[in-house]
Amino acid sequence: MDSVLGQEFKHDLMADDELQTLMKAGVHVGHVKSKTHPAMRPFIFATRSNVQIIDVVKTREYLAKAEAFLQSITARGGLVLWAGTRASARVAVTEAAGKTNMPWVSSRWVGGLLTNFKVIAKRIADMEDIEKRTASGDLEKYTKQERARINDEYQSLLKTYNGLRLLKKMPDAVIVIDTTQDKLAVSEARRMRIP
Image (cartoon, rainbow, N blue to C red; front, side, top):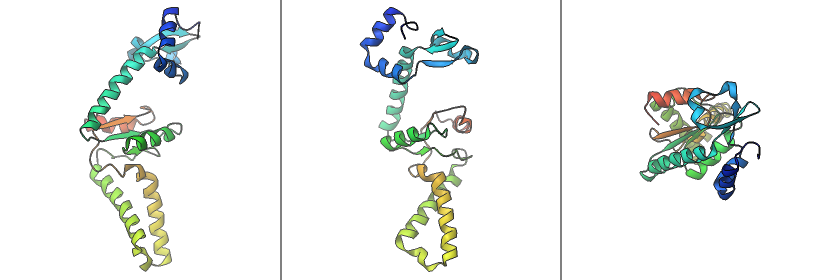
């Protein structure tokens, strides 16, 4: 770390616990220089061993702006949809959505989730209907084979729509963890003008 950071920057970093936390999390490690997008150049602090070092001070600044934006949405009762289908992001997305009591997608982004919301809302309602019928014992009147078919359908719906139970209306914002992996989520949000 000594070779990467200048002395005065290192001194500022040591004085700020938040910046130290970002550094320990590895937020400062970027891509190989050849993969850097030109729009990211203002956020690059330095290059060491052909790897870009991201400016954590600017990262903190933009994280604070994002936090203020999300707080303004939740303060007025808005919904924020968390999306992260990459295997390494699934647990973090589920936990963050649970802590904030917001809907989430972690298994796969269903095409039309935002652009064809009425159909998706009906599928969520179908899943909840099966749960209610099971709890009330209403499914006991069906044959064993029919109950097995209904259970298979329920398991399929649960896997895909479980995190969307709280999504009773269009979200006010979408947090996408990996815009490359979930480019359909980004595309649908842009199309529906959802930040």
